Length: 323
Ligand code: NAP
Image (tube, rainbow, N blue to C red; front, side):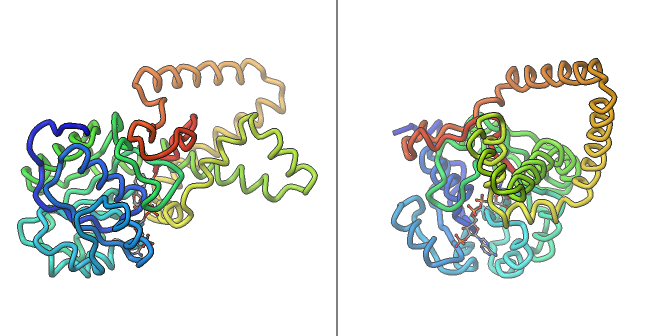
């Protein structure tokens, strides 16, 4: 049993959504003694029953309103498209001094949707753990998911400083490195580091799916040539990723424009036989890989560190299928 570094960071944490991320937060808080009590809400009775069985929260309740009663912190861990309705539902029931946060993969829209339903937006401090896998649901979570991963907090200038400090401490306790930035900056950075790569993976796997039958079977047979890694990323949750693209539309369209231009330049270089152009680019990209390794971001989160999942479930490089 891992010993807590000091006493709990929070009294009662209300988790709205108990899938991969929500259940990992519950497990990490328990493991590192970050909270005194966790109350969890999930939409379906199947998830509520499973979480009760897993015993990873103190109480499972049937409505988001019941979850937030007397909470010190409310953390929303559901798809982005559900935020507005959840904020409207919990708004009148969140205690006046409670912190409201989330884990969503897009940050400007998250604040707007939450602030529309929750009085006093100074208590809203959106967050995004840059950690994940392509799996979903409460069984997919594990306590070590956030270890040595970044968690980005995107407080508005008017956010309560003590709320930002508490959340920083909470994520650190769960093993994350914490950084603050504006929501708009976050959304531009993630558009290139996460959203575009997922879009490319979805496109490549989609193209392969549409190939003639004889070629398609060969694609699967020889997938270790690079295609395999794209299939893993393209297995990520369809609802979550639909939401990411619709909520980060402008930033994603901007990087897609740049990407299309660069792709066209490569197309031209190949057609004209400009080997030096290709070699120069591939040399520059190698340096980026070295930078990723030096930053310690090349190793996917390891569920085995938690002892709750078999080692073979560990996502393989490249990419953690992180949103
Ligand atoms: P997940 O495993 O699919 O879990 C989603 C949870 O939200 C489930 O408990 C689900 O309830 C609930 N839910 C779904 N739709 C809902 C709705 N309309 N109203 C209320 N509850 C609803 O998803 P996840 O991977 O944990 O993602 C949750 C959030 O984390 C997303 O906003 C995502 O952008 C963000 N995130 C994901 C990753 C990643 O790699 N997966 C990484 C960082 C951040 P039921 O189980 O009852 O259906």
